[in-house]
Image (cartoon, rainbow, N blue to C red; front, side, top):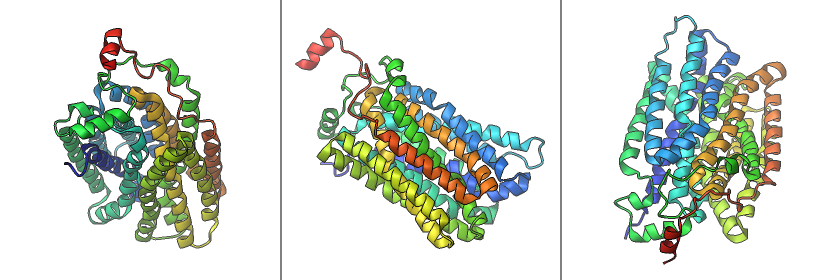
Length: 438
């Protein structure tokens, strides 16, 4: 009897891909001081480069979700990883003396965002096909713990590489790590559990009885119910709330390193150490939040489990953001703000679990719509945060983030994870229905 089920190994490897994805998207923040000096740009222009990634990422979400449904998570993730490896490397190849270097950096990071757009729609497509509904909280919690692991390892790891070999070497490292992980995924993964040669009959039965997608459904062949997806009140509110979630997340992903260095007066080494704290908190709190979501859902229903955690986590995040930014000491501020980042990610799995719950076979597309709204929030904060900090101080930047988090908590009150999208699962023919009944 297999001790660790196949689906657990595959969830772990998506965690690895998630970690590398965030290594690739946050490396620019760590290399930021070197890049601003080399290309003679300020923080606001660096914010444009960060926003370019997020705009490309957001603009490609729906297409990425469609690709995830059509190709399946195995091929979609592999192609995405190879794409973003290429453009991570391209960032390092931008010559410092070239005319219009800023716009070239913006173009490269925009293209990187297009490639990375596939990672979470494809992972949620995997969750919808492979993970029983009762396990989706912890599965998404583990996958999104990669956010903390990747972004948390980035400061000390890339700071060491940059110190010894320059900022470009850090991008070479990021690209190579991604390509290797993507190739491994292609060989170990399958689009549906019925296709995997190593899955046991017991695990296959557990999966088939715990998911809403009929086992005989051919992946990627169902008609996409665009009207139901785009007209879903739950999905619209989820998307609005996720806008707030990602807005706050990118305070940490895009600017926390610079905040500790510039606003708190720390040197690069100390800033790198303090920058680890929020991402360590994220790594721990993601799976804890997933377990909490599953446990409350099993005891009190999906609405209490999915939505209740979302409301509580975002409200507490808002409070900690405001308090933490006002502490005079760097250590107390870093620890409190790290706690707010961890609290925020307690509800990460709630978002993606609801998208899988309501959309079934079309989870990749529904979650892509949600994630597009979220990444618009990230793009806004990438440019708005340094502007607010320049005009009114960093404390005001965190206050705005807290207010947006509170608005996201209110939106959760209208979400209903038990109401599935119309026509999310294709109708069976009379012959198929009779056969399935037997």
